[in-house]
Image 1: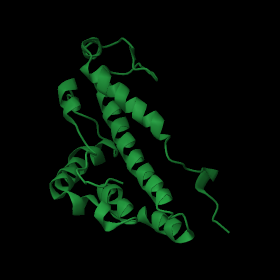
Image 2: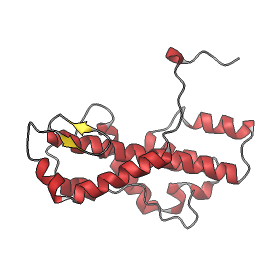
Image 3: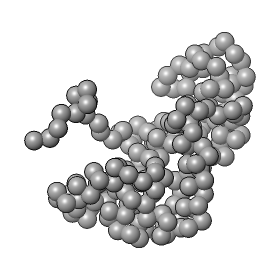
Length: 175
């Protein structure tokens, strides 16, 4: 019998279509001059499609980067799930391996190596693109992990946020 879940809460992957649409919307917003102008006005709400931002405009960019990171991570997780289904890996052994992936090893290593590696070592970012893997580790160390552990972007601007690019693996066979 499974142990009772903490607070009785079950967890599921974010719907991929939702996060992709949100990420596309943010990409369009960050290039929009009207949106950029509103970021400089304190005390006015900013409609970003799915919600109305009423906090400091500069903090909206931190929120958008955090949501973008969540989108990429959710897509990696879903891609492994889809590929496993395609390869017929839905047995208890795969389920146990997938569950064990989350028990140790930092976020970058888990998402881009351990998780795809349960399918095949060739899908691991460290095996298919060393340069991108190095940049990914640096991104997680300098940006992603601090943003998910109590920090925010300091004096962000739309140009620097627009430059943030993660999840562009150059593997020929993608998970």
